[in-house]
Image 1 (cartoon, one colour):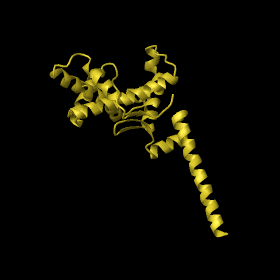
Image 2 (cartoon, rainbow, N blue to C red):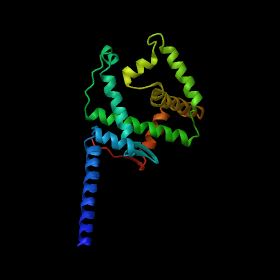
Image 3 (cartoon, helix red, strand yellow):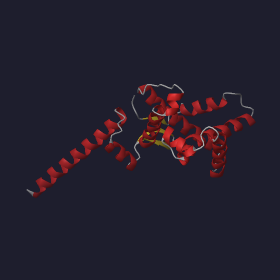
Image 4 (cartoon, rainbow, N blue to C red):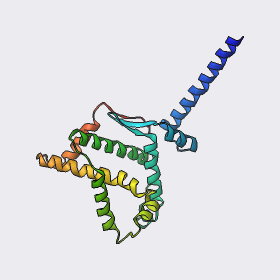
Length: 201
């Protein structure tokens, strides 16, 4: 009798776990859910949204980027600039593609020995904020209200890829590569079989 109870209990646990995993997978990959339980799980478990070689874009990365777009579209800046964009499937797909493109950029750069140091990133940040200080004196407040970012997030999300792109472009130019070679190299990387997108749109 005890053996039967143990077996039944094991089967029930398996079914519950399998059902839970299946439910999370469906909510993430098909529905792109951002409800509380999915957010909590994605912060704990690095659920992959896409991969570029051994570089993983997590579902949390995707949610963070999606949140940023939502905050921006609802911001005073977007209203002042007359930016009205429907938050639809195409926009969600573009969010993921931007993340995939960035990882391809980092991968190509790494392959050429290109790096961006913390000091370079800070110097670039100082240049950008100094130039913007005349229109937005409180940069930290502006970033938070417009994008939901602190200064470090801005450095990582915007300035870091911009510096990598600048350095990679300079490297290709030094080799005599024609204009457009950067886009070609990135696309060449994206066309490889080890680039996977798991979210379904």
